[in-house]
Image 1 (cartoon, helix red, strand yellow):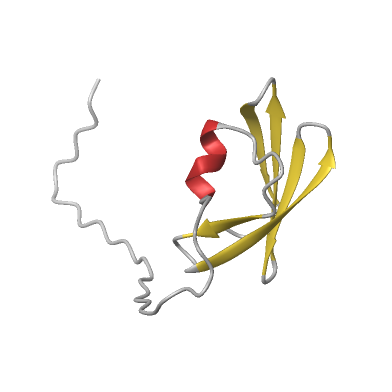
Image 2 (cartoon, rainbow, N blue to C red):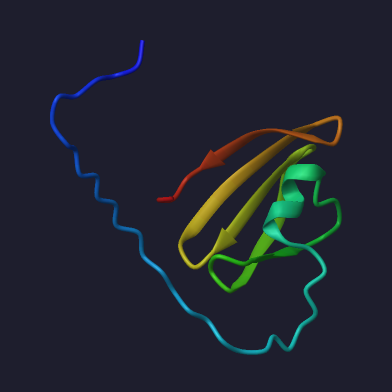
Length: 92
């Protein structure tokens, strides 16, 4: 059953926005969204479009990787090459 409110409701949402301009000296060959489609394998970094910089990768155990960048840390767990779990250890 849909929610019915007898009065108008104003919803407000604040979201920060950043504008980044520049050129990367290093080529971008792997990005954070690529992680959703397969393991990083031997890659040691991924470009994060949101931050405009690279995350560094390090394998922790077989099928598990830690991604770190300036105080942000995440863990990505894979089974048979498919992403099954993301553990956010820093604020979203």
